[in-house]
Amino acid sequence: MGIDRIPEPQDWFVPNASMAGAFAPVLDEIEADALPVIGDLPEDLNGLYVRNGPSPAHAPHGRYHWFDGDGMLHAVRFRAGRASYRNRWVQTDGLKAERAAGRALWPGLKEPMPEGALPDDAMKNTSNTDVVFHNGRLYSMWYRGGAVYVVDPLTLATLGKLEQDPRLVGLQISAHSRVDEHTGEFIFFAYGNRPPYMHYGVIGPDGALRSFMPVPLPGPRLPHDCAITPNFTILHDFPLINDPEALARGRYSLQFRQDWPTRLAVIPRHGSPDQIRWFEFSPRYMLHVANAWEERNARGETEIVMVGTPYAMPRAHDGGLDLRRLLHTIATQGMDFELYQWRMNLTTGATREGVVDDILNTEFPMINSAWQGRRNRYAYAILMGRTRTLEQPNFAGLARYDLQTGAAVAYHPGQGYWFSEAPFAPRDGATEEDDGYIVGFVWNGEERRSEVWVSDARDIAAGPVARVILPRRVPHGFHSCWVREDQLAAGGRAA
Ligand SMILES: [Fe+2]
Image (cartoon, rainbow, N blue to C red):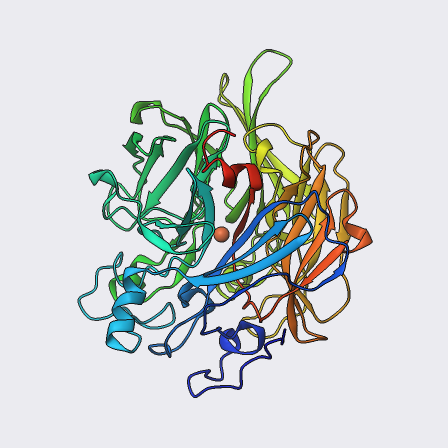
């Protein structure tokens, strides 16, 4: 089997860091079985690794930003020591319209909004950001919020949109809406530029919309993730906004309001708007949650704990926030993160927050999904390198955190490797939280090919136990999930 080389630059692979090298799109949809492996692919690793990411199907309309490309799913299925690969675009309404027109119709993040466009509708829902497994299907989601696309996990064929209830139609459902695999519920949030600015809802395992409510915010915000526990959902209101004056001129410009607090909403999973409780913390911005859980303290009070990877808050020479540096880091995909914890006491209303680890610089935190919402011990993440070229982040390795002791282990295989979000895949029959593997794409710049690295979750520093050689380059991308074989077989119902 031949290995695809990076395609020769086509006319529209413009001199743009976000569309060069291993960022460049792939333009075909393929399948390949019995992939070659370096090392031993464990026979007790059975399931599906699927990752979303941008692969623009047309020459960009104006300047291209990495976040603009059409969503493409890349999946590797592991069965009894064998691996197969498949990729498919998510057939979004936008992609179909552009296919019909034979060209890109929507400008991206770097271009002004089209004349007359509404801020919520100015961009194409590329569905390129996140993917989760619910009710036997993959759900593909976009970070700016839009329709959720429903995809067959085995064929990667797009089956339609998640809009079985009229209240879901036109709703801007965000990436990082979450699945509770214990109850079979899909817990989502939606946000936009029009009041009430946020909605929250729960879809049951039967597909019915069980809960739905507005979550009024003081204005438009840029939430990216949420967190769930068995009884509560935590929604985010960080003081990062699109500058309203720029927005009125059809431009996007980030503004961080250091005079505003971080606000976290705690909502009973099936609660009502009058049960939303807001807790205030120091101003900060975070993309991704690692986990959240409920804890009972010595006084019998319930505390909600949330752990994630916010941006570090850079300090100026006078000790105050270096606002320019923070905004520059966020706006240019700079990497400067810390592992951080927020605590909310539901009885007293008291809050506490603080750094868990600021030695390693990591993002894209993942856990054993069976522990989502429960107090867990281990988190895994992508180790972020400091070196990068303009607008190209450096996903340099893997990290493992022990949240109980605070210990952390980092693994970096040397220069020339570029990692991708790597979910935890439990070993068949595992009962302990960390009994399994970390599975993720790696761009091997040395050999100029894409691979999937399988590492022992208990010993990431030993390097991969197996490297699956992919038949083609997988462009750098965003989020992923692991679907166990028993989940695939049961069609998502309790296995
Ligand atoms: Fe994300």
